[in-house]
Structures are given as structure tokens and as C-alpha cells.
Image 1 (cartoon, rainbow, N blue to C red):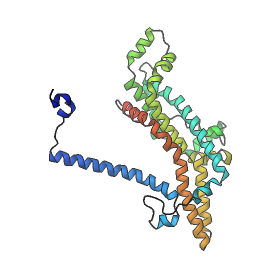
Image 2 (cartoon, rainbow, N blue to C red):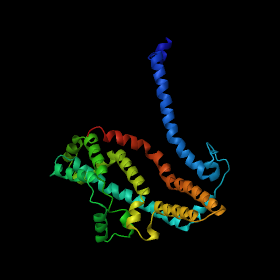
Image 3 (cartoon, helix red, strand yellow):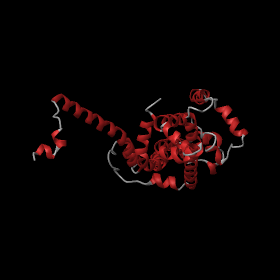
Length: 305
């Protein structure tokens, strides 16, 4: 038996011309530079959080800390409110993500059904808020009127509905769930609710992972809503507490002179890098496990518009 028959994959290889090879090399170089441009800033933040601020300011920190220094983390973790706010953020993210999926996924499925009465008008009602907002004052008065102001649930319930997520879910259901499944389920005597929970949801893990990740990241990074609607420090999330600590340290350093001012400014810089690391680490740890669903869900949801 010939060598080509033993290795058909090798036999099908096409030798690239000089121009094609040069273009392929160019593509790889550009891709490598883009990856480096994304990864290096993240790596620099991590090593800067463990470095002396003077080394960072003087450009001596490139790939590894020049002198290992943990003062930034020590100063942050001495703040007892950090741990409480961390717990608040975890609860807000977990409950907010579950509640967001519970309202956005069924809404997207309902809008994907051709037999929904008033479907076009309801779609328009979801699209309009994406371009026109009621404004901060009306929203604040609404939140206050329903009794959610300065409460735990103000970070979960009022902002759970996302028109964008609903439209993504609707597009996914229209392009990925064939109507023949619904017809077969009807022949078997399945109701709409049974069809949704038994058939549609198990087939929608990709889009649920995508919307769940988007929602979780949005809630985890949220600080403005907490600034407006939460005055109770015990209920405030991590991002708002870190912002307050950094602003306070900068103000103290600005109101001080001499060597003490320089030391306080260095400590403030170290805490700034450390706060970025501890606030993004959980999301960065979760993302790799959802990446395959994320890519799959985005592609499936973009087949039809």
C-alpha cells in the first residue's frame, strides 16, 4: 500500500505559494500582537499590585515584580467592611443572575412564538426602551414608591428586565428551536409550559450561559445603582466600597505634605491595583468554564435577525 493511501490527510495538503505563506505569517503575527495587547495589561495590573509603587512609576516593572510588596492587599483586607461588601456582591450577582434569567428567558421565548397575540406591538415596546430611557429621577421615584429604596432587593428586582437580553433570547429560539418540535409535543399532549420546561430549556443551555454571564458581569461591576439607591453601608456592594476607600485615601494624601504625603500616595496606588485584582478575580475564574457556551450561544443567536 502506498504512503499516500496510508495517510490521506497528508496527500490532500496543498503547498502554499510564497504570497499565501507570507499572508498567513502576517495573520499569525497580527493575532499574536492582539493577544499580547489584551493579556499584558491584565498581567501588568497583577504584578503592579505586588510591586513597590516607585518601581512601577520608574518603569522597572515589566514582567515580574522588582520588589515584592503586599502592603496594598494588607491595607485593603484590614478594612472589615470589605468582607461584608464582598458577600453582598456575591449574593447580588447570584440572585440577580437567576432572577434575570427567570424573567428574560421566558419573555424571549414568548416573543419568538408566532401565535402570540399582539406580538409586533410587544416587540416594539421592548425595543423602544433600548433607545429612550425614562431618566434617573422617574426611576428613583418609582423605586421609592414601591418601597425598594435602601433595601437588599433594589439591586436585584428593578433592573432585572433587559430588552437586549430578551431580543437575543428571542433570536436564539427563532433560529435554533424548530417548530416541528412544538408540533410533535402537541401530538404527545404536552402543554405550553411542559414543552417550555421539558424541551426548550434543555436545548437552550448555550444562550442561558451567555445571558447568565452577561448579567453576572453587569451586576458584579455595578456601583452606580448602589450609589443612588443604597445609603445603608451594610448593604453596599464591593465596587462601591472600593471606590469610597480609594477616593478617601487620595483625599487624605492630597491634604498631607512632606514624606507622609508621598507614602500615603504610594499606598493609595498599591491599593488601587489590589482592588482591581480582587474585584475582577472571581469573574475571571468563572469565565473559562462558560467560554464554550458563550461562543456557541453568540453564534447561534446571530444566525437570524
